[in-house]
Length: 456
Image (tube, rainbow, N blue to C red; front, side):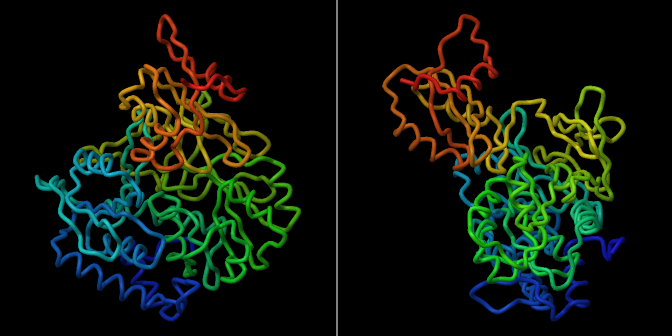
């Protein structure tokens, strides 16, 4: 398929319900297969309920996502109701969630998939003018900002459709294929898996982990997306799934020896470079290491070594108080803050222009962790840096200057109330006072890698 069959996600599901009515759309280990016709019917019924509960076209609806059938239906039903979907981590703490809803003027929240939608205190006001079809807003996805505060990247229906179209053109996905929903649906990668399956007529498999070889074998999974940590765990098993044809790796670099082992054991590994603002994949390296700029995208490296991107998958902009702000330069390029270069037919990522790092496939912005640490009454200063980790690639380490009397156990208990698990520092080290209070992150990162004095 080289062209789009329709212009919105709800209409794409309607098309599949006609063209592949009896084909499996959702597979679960503990239930019969759900075909495209049945999925479309469930989504339509749920959309009617949401509208009856008060959701109007153009409203934003926050959804605490789950990787089950109810969660999947709500992901599709919110756009089908004409609303805009904001999927969020199911364990996002109450305080940052309330801040997000208030600052972005989100009028509705679904705290559990399949339940009654709840009105927040932050709706109202005049909604922005609405566009239709390909260019209409569809979703908002949280992504880390350089300030440490999460941003909401807004994607159109066309962004999602063209992202799936280009990905399926390079790495085919069609009827009979089975793609494991291995990525969270509050990330753009998880949403992309759903749209790719809808576009290709493939089945989405729920209920298992990417590194669980026995589950992949049992469910006949043919395609899976994972990060380096999951690949390492999959390879640690004796037997690999016999039907697994394609492994799409992303979320950061993968150590060469793991790729060599995977290829030696018959896995077809594709390495992807992507970002939330481009609706996931931009450049994908095939198993031979050749880079493919996916259709409907453009990618170049400027004179400063920064990667710039644009195209049909480029997001609409960042949500700011209910309005969408563009984030491109005068020529339509988005500046990724990623540094890299082209060499031997591949795109090599050399680092980031800011301080963000990746841990087990999750983006971590040090300033976001520091902002939480600085709210603790006994912490005077906090600096967070990455430390190399054999399993996760990098893990956060916090350097602290305190007024004394703070133990690691109580601090970890406090942080668990304010941070998701992947952002919790794995160690607390002493931050020595400096006359100019200047933060020297490079020096601290070297200390973290070598070990250092524990924080008092």
